[in-house]
Image (cartoon, rainbow, N blue to C red; front, side, top):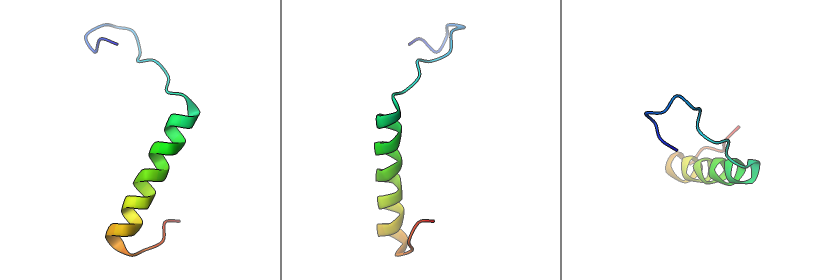
Length: 37
């Protein structure tokens, strides 16, 4: 994907989005000691 083009970026698969979200939640909880949600 080329940022300079006028086309939108390709959509990420739902599985990738969910796994990435889970990693961020895990990092948040480890860093803050607070449960997400």
